[in-house]
Length: 196
Image 1 (tube, rainbow, N blue to C red):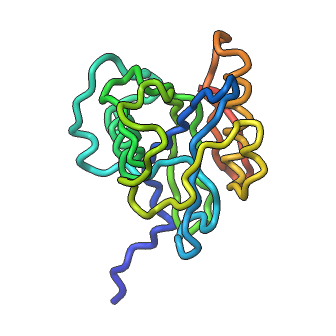
Image 2 (spheres, rainbow, N blue to C red):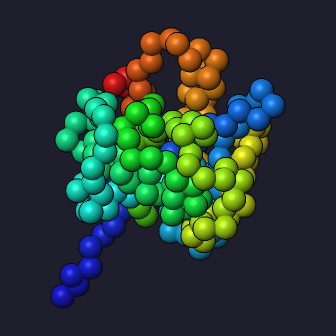
């Protein structure tokens, strides 16, 4: 009897951090490359992030969460801060106001891993340590570097990361405009976009 669980059928909550930094007046984002043997998106350049762990839900943060995230908010925010620290060595304070919810995407069916990922923007000025020191990062992402936002699409990216980059460009160009978070998902064999 096979008791193994098919991971492609499980959809796990996940958090991704788009860290924005102004370098000589040009917006940059922090990205790294996943390993060639990674089960999920091998060799692709991505933003730091990962699955929400059970213990993330027990975290404590100051301030108020974005109501669009519902009961999962604390776990999503804590996971975002934790994953950024683990994968880059960069530390954000545990406060709701250091992260801005900007995008949600559910991995399409048929992939080896599926995630319900929420993407958050964080600003480099909220990072508590050296923005160029990645020596404490784990080995999950290689080639960690700051890349100009306008040049990021030249990297080998997952489709959804390209879509998110376009959204980030729009936000950077109109920071004060009202913003609804796009939600990318699949239903009845088709891709859909909604606004949250």
